[in-house]
Image (cartoon, rainbow, N blue to C red; front, side, top):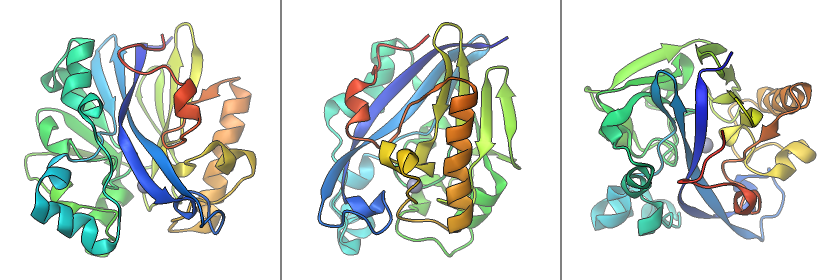
Length: 258
Ligand SMILES: [Zn+2]
């Protein structure tokens, strides 16, 4: 039995990046425009948010823009009005206050930007990711200011865990120290696998190509293979977080999968 009723895919903006960020050592001449997503679940016990976009303040305020992007030679993400989370929530008919549980794949800046809006919710994450993010050894991909808020209710988890019937999180360490992915069971659509950054593009799974960044290459490859295996076993579908082609065939909020 599943408690999940609807899956909404939120398109929260685009990152303009060399392809090697997604495919290790492959395609460095190509600059991709990769989507940034978040996922909202309507369940029998309330609303659950998986990941939460980029912080618009870091794009709007010149000092933050410089510190977090320009000084590192990174092109700032593109977030238009239609990508803003407030607006997408409003189109669905809810507000941030309706979300009682936020689950984070990892704490890179394109996954944790709206966290400060969810101090009323519990925030589940792998303990290893949390320890790494606060450990002082992070790269520019972590914007500590976005997640370092004493008002946040962290709930650290260890390994695979079930959030509620029909929503399982898988330990997919490799891209980062504590990366996790999700498997969702929907009443009509069946199994949906959300890899997040375990593999950005379809190519990462088809050809088993490592992500550009990893903390452990063997673990990153094992995570790609594990997600492929689970998708095949359950006859499920993957919904990719960063694939610029697949996103155009994905049903976007306010439409949903049920
Ligand atoms: Zn990442």
